[in-house]
Image (cartoon, helix red, strand yellow):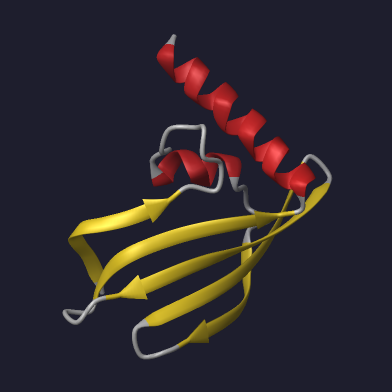
Length: 100
């Protein structure tokens, strides 16, 4: 499976710029693990868990696939609110450090 040329990525934190995947991997540390997969013919929901600074975080990747088996949409959702705020802080610090 590959990315469609016009694929759409929905961010879990709307007021932040899109962070490259390698940056996300720095924030989502080695505790990251997928715990459940629900896969249909043209879509998938991947449930994941991780821990950052002692906070347990749950999220899902929602993936839509087009007719050519290319990813056309990728959406990440996180919970609880504490997790969203923590990730916003970590990604903001990472982006600010990169800009300097």
